[in-house]
Image (cartoon, rainbow, N blue to C red; front, side, top):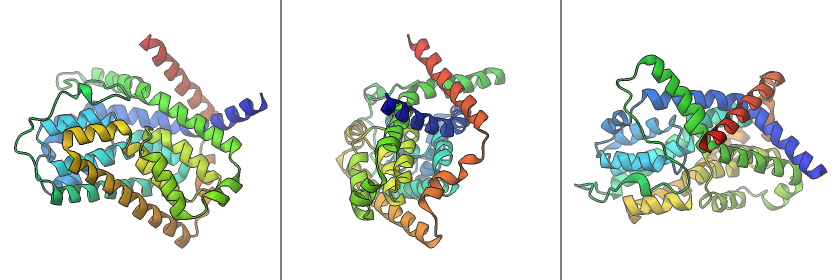
Length: 346
């Protein structure tokens, strides 16, 4: 019983820290979904050049799609004529960031880590796009593009809808329906799982374990990469796990590797990418993630040394900025919305 209570306390602590920022994140995600059309994105990604890679990377940063949720959007972009280079960039920048994930990263890891994560994910997407541009010739036809119904096996997908004729008041309602309904429903199970895993790590894992087995940066990065690539975990759900490990002494490089590789890849996503975009594109996609994870992870460790940043202070120092009452209220609202969505499904 003491163990269960201890895990719950640690998990509730993580939930309280994340909830206010998650609520803001889901709200802004709803705004993006309602007011930005997929067709608008497609128009900018059709040309096979460097600028389409940059645009795809930029478009992907705020969009709240996980590594499976991004697949239907990607196949749709392919059907609309987006270039392979732009598609690969979009496939990396979108699931590794997202407006909800950006708020959640700030909640647990602070401003420095948040800004670095966004910039590094953006850079990784550009690296992958440029490699694809050099090595993959665009297809003349999109005959192998199929219905996106067979692309999603690990999360539900909600079809886009025509918003052009909606009144503004209805659009605002749609913001809440999508942000706190569809998107939260898709993300909640992974968020709760991530928070619980973070609670277990905080309660059970002794700091000596990290210092004994994962002290060497390269070894710890390899371990996090091996764990992250096949695992399905959304960008927001990976954050409490990384935060708990960093609080126990895991170096920032290894945490970043997990935060990049975990959301960007999983067994289902890799299968779909190989099927619809080809094995060569899949190889470039994986190679880009692995190389980027090590480059930007190593650079993050170097920046921590240069600026003399304390690991635990980075994780914990900014958490007193919001009143405890607001955090608890946000957690109650957040959990209430999850329960409401569960009853809606039934």
